Every structure is written in C-alpha cells, then in structure tokens.
Image (cartoon, rainbow, N blue to C red; front, side):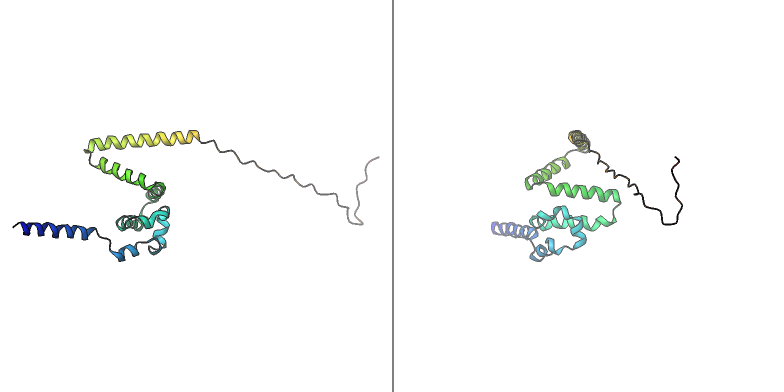
Length: 166
C-alpha cells in the first residue's frame, strides 16, 4: 500500500512539473523577433526585457496587445501608460509590485477598496509634488525680423517725377 501511495505522489509531482515546463516551440514563438509588428508597437516599452520574461508572462502581454486595437482611446492611453511604467521598473520592483498586488487581492472587499483609495490619493499627491517641482515652461521668444523697406528705385525714363517745392 505504501508503494502505491508513493507512486501516486510521484506521478502527481511529475504531472505538476510537466504542466509548468516550458514548451521549446512556445519559447521561440514568443520571442520579441517573432511576435509581429502590431504587437511590437503596443508592447514597445517592454522590448528591452521581453526575452527575459517567462512564456506565460509573454502570453499575458500578447493578449493585451491583441485586445488593444478594439479598446476605446481612453483605455488605450491607460494601457500604454501602464505598459510604459511597467517597462521602466527593475526586476526587483516588478517582483515587489506582484507581491503587493497578491496581498491586496487577499483582503476583504471593503479593506481592498480603502487600500485602493489610499493608493489613488498617494499617487495624486506624488503627481502634484512632481508638477510643483518642475520649472514652468519658458516661453519661446518670438524672433522678429525687421520689415524690409524697399530701396528707392529710380523711376523709369520718361516718367514724370514730382519736384520738391522750393
């Protein structure tokens, strides 16, 4: 009986490992060079680190890129900003962000709403502080060109000219 139980555990372990195994063709198909120009355009902020992501993560982002053209312009702007922000994070910052997200997801809905509101307020303060520390844009000076005054040209021959009054 012990052998049967041990074999069952062993088989289940192998099946779990096989489910997480990387399919070599999937690895190649999801490389940056192989995902196509439409996806590359949407996912451009992630390009520097793309080939270091797991195939599962790449598939997630490719699904976002596939849905992107069908979104309203406001949603497209939001997705583009989030991708740009995510692409600017270090690996350690991304790990921390995922861990924080998981923690928030485990909270009861009412506490989750409070945490989200606190994050929104903190983000708004951060943006306000950033705007306050940035110098106001200096107006571009308008270069005025002096108006050209036509040079006195002699009147054609035979044209009467006014004589100054003496």
